[in-house]
Every structure is written in C-alpha cells, then in structure tokens.
Length: 188
Image: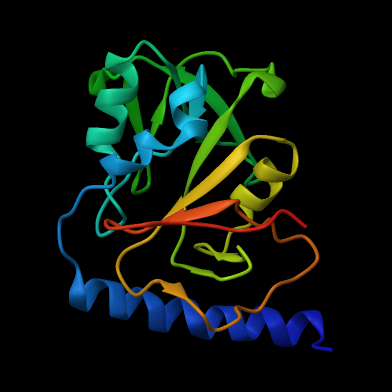
C-alpha cells in the first residue's frame, strides 16, 4: 500500500505530464452530448464550472442548460480552498476573475441536497471513476458533501485504463465524458 506522501508526489508528477500532453494536443470540441444523459435530462439544478484555457469547454453546455430553464450553479473558491456554489444566469458580466477562474457574484446556494448533477473538471479519469484534478482538493471537499450524480469532462485519451493514484479523501465520479462518449462507473 502506498503512503500518502508517495501518492501525493505521484499525483504532482502526473499532473505536470498530463497538463503538457493536454496543451500539446488541445482541440476545441463540444461536450454538448452529455445533456442527452437521463440524469441531465431530469435535473432541475446542475452545478458546473466555467472552463478556461485548454479545459473541456462548458460554454455550449451552459447555454443549453439555461435555455431549458434548469438552474445552473458555478463554484466560488473560499479562503480555505473549499468551494461553495452560486446560482448563475449566464451573464458573463456578473462574473469576477479569481486568478484564471471566473466566479459568480451572489449568495451561496445552500440547499445542497437539491443539486441533481455536478459537471466536474478533470485532467484524467480512470476506469474506476478516480479523477485527477488540479491538485488543490477543492472539488474533493465539495463533492464529499453532495449525493449528486457526478460527471467529469475530459479530452480524448484522458479517460484511461491505467489506475490513477487515489487517496482516502479523493472523490470518485459516476461518469466521464470525452467529446465522443460517456463512460459510466459503478458506485462503490
């Protein structure tokens, strides 16, 4: 069994490698097909993220969610690196820059049990639903409080059959989507 500091070190090396690979083969694509999933079709409240750089784009997904009249939440980073969710109406002028991330203004959405689906960023996802994120642990803390269906967006070749290092606090996702497919994972 790996020690926590070995796993953390492995994750840091993998993040650097995966960021470079993503940057080298980046293509603008769409993940709009995820909205055909039963879970997203039935959702009344969806939490997502405002993509930037070479992350899988959420712009068209957000537009369609809002067009359907579904409530859309975006994350806001707290001083302790935890996340809270804020209702967003699609107005980009209502966002504020926090480093590279655009965050919504407004009150925190507190009835977390009403969040049906969470669309999550990831650098890689393995066949068990283990997700490698950016390394701050913000999403793991936020996802631990939710019983929502969680789907990670990744580029081609970022859904891997190789097991990713995972620590006890890491939160698995229920599915991962590339621009072409959706892979579902068994809940453990």
